[in-house]
Image 1 (spheres, rainbow, N blue to C red):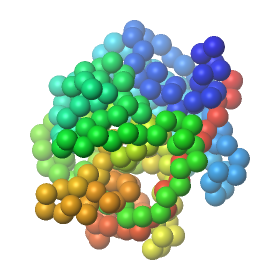
Image 2 (image 1 turned 135 degrees about the vertical axis):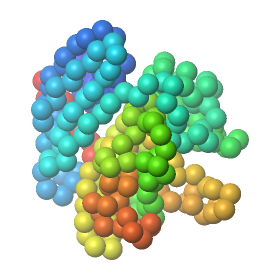
Image 3 (image 1 turned 180 degrees about the vertical axis):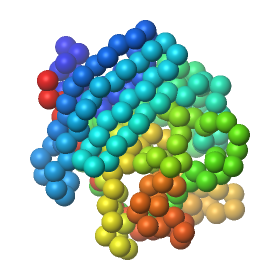
Length: 233
């Protein structure tokens, strides 16, 4: 039953592992569904180690490496404008693992993310921004909306409607550069000074924006496409 569930929704495995108590090691291999992205991407070295104190996952998709670390619950959120998730205080929803596609509220507005099945067909073109430099100037670490430690130099992103976590291919349409990022946060949201900022389709980490060549510009027109993966057991 569990194997069938993971086959249908492979990205659930990453969330499940983050929530596992005790110490466990899970080894598996993933292949990207054929024909979904340019070239061939294979997720390899899927060894996940979780302890009662920390949770750390390292995996690769093609040439891109992702390190996932569970953040302490007392760390501040990168998006402190999130008021509730699934009707709960944000930290409690994270603790219970009720984040993945749960509705959430920002400044009184309710956002309803798509589920994993809906997300498999997601592709959109629009404006990307980046964030993270502000957290580097502050003391201590910050937590993403699904409870991961935020690394501004990592290949991560925030999205308002995709399930968390999920991997997407992002292409800078201005220079043709493409990378893969892990979506693990919520945003971008409208700001008081710039209400149109909420129309941006994705907020990339500083590290991801640098790889795409627009970290000095602030904004770029991009194409975002979900990369479906399948577990091979």
